[in-house]
Image 1 (cartoon, rainbow, N blue to C red):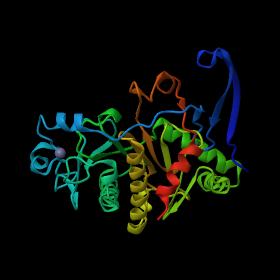
Image 2 (image 1 turned 180 degrees about the horizontal axis):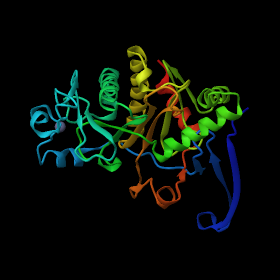
Image 3 (image 1 turned 180 degrees about the vertical axis):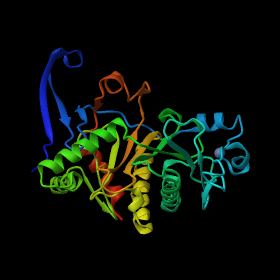
Image 4 (image 1 turned 90 degrees about the vertical axis):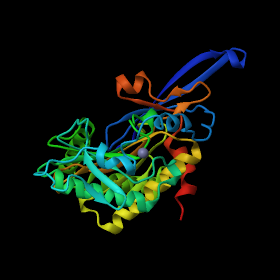
Length: 340
Ligand SMILES: [Zn+2]
């Protein structure tokens, strides 16, 4: 059975003071994503360019006190695991270090410091650095999330996206139960399989998006990348891995390809002036748990000239997103960065 990419329209009219009070008629487009059930309104306004990424304020603030994640402090200023849980206290791989989150919100909750650099612009993250971090995250889940099924690897990049520190770090979370978003994904995947002779919703979704082409970016190793039909942010970019796979199933070369995709998105973000974003990689930790593997990067921008937060009451309290950058246009802008 085909997935339904639902769109509905409502018309609205007003007398426009900027056009000598002529009647202006606008279409309000509402979309529902067949994969996640997310609802988003896509408006078509011209927005000003965001301007260059500038984190000087955050960097200056971060220099007023010692950074616990910098190499000279990490040993004495970050948490350690109990000896019975992890004899060496922390996990290490290359320049990356993993330790318990001092402000936990999930049964297994760890912080993963990516490297020695205190600050990196989005375009400065390399595939090597990110692949190393993803590989350490795999090890972290394997060793410290035993018996837990539903996990995520998360990233708040910069203070305006919820980061507590400038120094680049991921957060690992794993629990017995999926989060609300994960539960919805899982429920929909299972319902789709039930009514379609066991078919994989992610494979069907990707097939539909590849055929349609307007939001399709391409396949890189295990993951296919698209701009979501019903976005959760103005800049929302998604990678999906079909076939009952999770982060722990990816082989080293597949992890490298995923990191490569991430780097392309980050370089694109910087070129567009997106200097603040959230990332979540949703993953099951064992086969058959039913949670599709989805990686999502969502902007957290301020809209010029007033610096208006892209999140407003609609997203915060209605659980719907309004965007004025249609995902098809976002894909068109991203495609040149995707080649190569
Ligand atoms: Zn630092």
